[in-house]
Image (cartoon, rainbow, N blue to C red; front, side, top):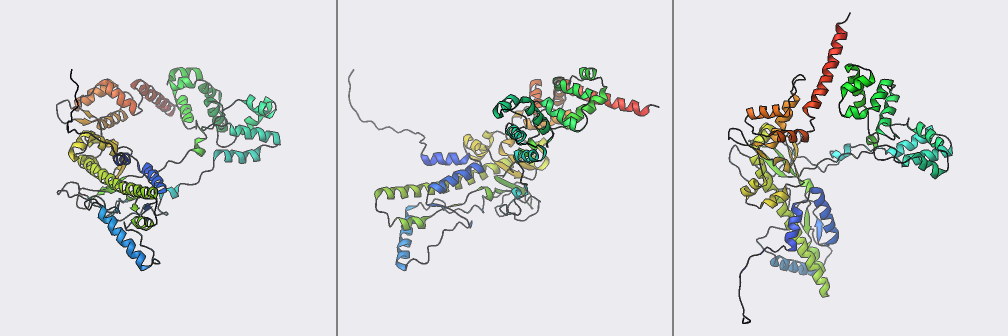
Length: 515
């Protein structure tokens, strides 16, 4: 074998993930909250980035106090910076008030970028930033549970030792309002008798909210029933057999409690009215309103108007004036490199944000076009859709569509939906026709079960037969999976529930018809 040295020229293709490309991909999949946090970090790190507070996309004027010769030098350097940029690239000071617009034929979806989504259905502009109209302003300030209990402790418990015991018990509460530790720990910590701790606990179990300081679910429900004067012997036996109640073994419960179906139904209704987690009424965090990324409304001439929600998009500018001013005073190579890198990073960030906004609008526009019948007629007409369908229509990669539709929402006349909601699995039609969306099948299963008669409970096999008669080819295990996803109990459990209701109604009818 002869070894030799030679020079070859080869041409290959490879994908290079530059930092700029990685940044663009990262921004594409961020939600509006994550994007806002990321932009805040960049604003702190990069001195050449600034917010466009006015929203006009313009740059700050140079200070009027600068001498004429300094202003001329700055303008000359700005022209030099402009000559270094690519004239084919979009401007860096992007105004997001004017969103993507595309023409559509008559009768199809049309797009407009001049007005925001109006929740009342009227054609007017809505300012989501108005503090008087902000939804967060309507959320009342909540008193914490521990503060509420501390106030009651000072009013209801006397003596310094008892109050110290009460303070320790308050600190032992978990998030649901149950006592998290043992009474021996409190007694050992404070050097008192366990009987004294039990006496303080008994008094504090009468505090508001009812059921607080319980150690078990049974004790929590018993405290609330005792306050309502409904803790009779039959109810106590029912609390002792909560596991049988969970299994819906109503016949055995009626035998143990010594009650009929009507009384058992009333007892179960009383238990359902109780609060198993009393602390949640105080310390539950108010649900944050969903800020949609895309706004949609009906166009006056027909079709739909779609645009980005300007309130969720950061407006950024590259401060080239500051760069031109500061670059004159820089002498060291490290400082020049630092400024150049920040200028490049700022340019890429603004361009990436623009590309992200354009891509989102492009994807959402195609989703709305393909699900047009859903927006007109409801969930029964949701069309089966996968990421590949959108990717092929807009000539993008499937992974890009997946990133765009992750953690993003659209406000429509039918409500706010996550973009992933419109992508559903297809269920074949029995006659070989158009496939059905899995969401449509789930909705149909729920409708059938909600309308079933107490004397004719629909089993999964019966539901399969009904759906196949309607042209939907589906397996029994699929029906069971969809039913469980909808939190609908099995036919056996539903027969027990509705049978109990029938027995209760029959008892009332007998009593009403008696002498």
